[in-house]
Every structure is written in C-alpha cells, then in structure tokens.
Length: 520
Image (cartoon, rainbow, N blue to C red; front, side, top):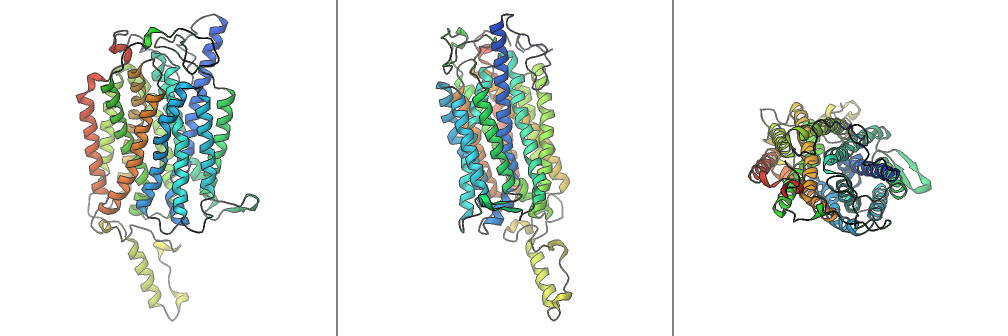
C-alpha cells in the first residue's frame, strides 16, 4: 500500500475532520480553509444522499403505477421507463462534468437539482391525461435522470478536494450516503403505501395524493432543501495528493495560485478505459436486478401490486442497510489489502448471487389464466344463484396474480423460491456496493490531481448507459425467454469482468504510484 495510506487510520463515517486527521497548519486562515473544505464535502455527501432518495423513493411503485394509469403498458415498456432515467443521466453527466470543470460547481448542481424537482412534480400529474399516460411517465423519469447527472459533479468535487490519504474514506462516505438514501427511499415508499391507491384529492392544486404520487412530491421537497444548501454552504476547494491547496480552474473567487507539479504527467488511458468497461458491467448487472425484482416477485410469488410495493420496499431497505455495513468494511479492507482485491472479491460475490437465482426444481409458478379460468367456471356453475358463488382466494380483489399466461416460459420454467430470491438479495447487496465504491475510488486515483469533472462525467455516463441498456435487455429477455436465460447471461457477463480485471490488474494503479511519486 501507499506510504500515505496509514493502515491505522480509522476515520469514522461522516467524521472526516477528526481522529487521525489533523489541521494542515495552526494558522487561522488555513484552519478556516480546512473546515470550509470538509463542510463543503459534507454538502456533497448530503447531495448524494438526496439524489439517491429521489430515485429509490419511487422505484418499487413504478410498475404498479404504470399498470394503473395505462392498461396498454407491459413488462417490456417497464424496461424503457426504468432505462429512461439512466438515459437522461448518461446524456447529462458529461455536460455537467464539463460545466463544473470551468465554472463554480454550485451552478451545475443548482441547475440539475431544479430539473429534478420539476420532473418529480411532473411525475405526480402523469395520471391526468386521458391517453398515452405511459409516455408521460417515460418523459418524467428521463427528466429526473437528467437532473441526476450531477452525480459526476459530486464525485469529482470529493475526489479533487481530498488528499490521497483521505480519498478512500471520503469516497466510501459518499457511497455510504448514497446507500442511506437507498435505504430511506424504499422505506418511505413502503411507509406511504398506507395512503392506498385512491388516497385523497387536493383540489387546490388538482392533485390526487396517493401511494404513487406522495413519494415523488416528497422527493421534490428534498430537492428544494438541497438547492438551498448548495447555494448557501458550498465553496470551491482543490488539493493535491498530499492535501496541499492548489488553485482549481473553476475557483473564481480567490487569487491565483501556482498549480502543483503533482498534476504533471500523462493519464494511463488503458486504465481509464478498463475502469469504464468494468463500471459499465457492474452497473449493468445491478440495473438488471433492480428492474426485474418487482415483476419477478409478482410472477413467482403471486404478489398483488400493493404487496409488491410494500415487500420489495422492505427488502430494498434491508439491502441498503447491508450496503452501509459493506462500505464500513470496504474502508478497512482497502487499507489493508488494496483496492483491486476488494473489487475482484465483490465481482465474485455478485456472480454467486445471480447463480443462486437460477430456476431449479419441479415446482412451477401459478399462472394468471388459471385464476381467471377458475373464477369463470365458478360463476358459470352458480349462474342461477350468483350470490352463492365463492370468491377465489388467490384473487379476492379481482386483480390477476401470478405469472402471466402470455409469458409462455411460465408453463415450463421452474419457479424461483422465496429463499433463493432473498439469498440473491443478500449476496448482490454485498458485492455491488463493494464494487461500486472501489470503482469510483480507484478511478479517481488513476486520474490523480487533474480536474476530474469530464472524466467523472464519462464514468457516470458509462454507468448510466449500463442502466439504460440493462432494463431494456432484461425486460425483453425475461419476457420472452424467462429468468433462466436472463440470469445465465448475467453470470457470463460477470465472469467476463473478472477475466478482464485479472488481465489488466497491473494497469489499475494510482497516478502518483505510476509516476513514482508514492511507493505502492
């Protein structure tokens, strides 16, 4: 490990300016500058947290909401709706990254959050049009994703405002805040499900406040708070690998300072490209899992729309809590064994998660047409006295449950057991956060102290591209061929990522180590 990566450092979560870290100087101005730097970094933590909440607070209810507002929507269109968020983020990330490289970061941040707030309000009203509601949902999710392009700005800020010694901890904290939002979002959605599908009418603003619109409205409120923090608290800071302040090119309010020679040298473009490819695969496989979780559970376990929102909200909240523990563990492991072994281990765990999810056994999922046929037979039998006709237990609310008959694989593919589903949640919930935080940390180290806005924008765009293609891929393959084909192909992709990492393992080192400034 680097001589600057003290294995004894135990920086607590979100408490970066205490413990083993000391002020760079006793001078009051440097003292204030140090405090201002960490205050701004914490605003970035909070921005990442709210961005995550804004996405996950509706993710478990998108599918049932889509079914409710537009009968013509199917699982394939759900893939496009989920992908729209990532497509918007993919387009916005390089733009916001480039903007942040040349202007104060509060500008792209405030602009992107405002777009996010507007898009969430739009989402609340997509039920009003008399037709084509599914396309309004598609547009609203694309705009929310465009606003989420600020993730590149957040991570580039944290990378540029921390020394090499501080960066593992700061990046882990950033991802931990993202995971906290990942927990709170589904938990809030599950808590708001008690409002029900009908909810209450707010005639003053012509809004139907129910379990689908309330979370989006809450996300918009969070966005307003975020804008105020960015405008009032955030300040520009840039340090080199040793923690010495250098002039950021977008730091327009201070006198010019000499740029440290630590930024000199060429970036290893093979390492940059490899990092982007690995990150694409990591985000692709997780996008597949988060997209298919609700339809899969409804097909395999015969959950109703309301049950799926509640139970998947609880499951995702538990996975998010697990992620927090993984981030804390990663902070320790990366100090002791390095970033690359942690990344390799995370990919291996993800492979196990999808392998466990493969269908097996002799039990098959309940078919929706069986419910409807039973209901028809029962009522035809009791036609003279329909009042005495019993109500089918599996469909007492007249909402079809089970695996749709039009998905022909339902009739010959074994059912996935609840134990398999939960085990896969635990494994993927452990492997993904480890890979995610290490990907960002290692990438920032490969880039060094150079302005990272554009490069982080491309990495975020790579992940967003994966989150665009992943939902479309899984919705098509799952609908036509079933979970066996879908999850087998994912296992092959993960194996490919492991082989790529092994082949270019020696290239994925920090900028300072590569140029001999720090010993590994």
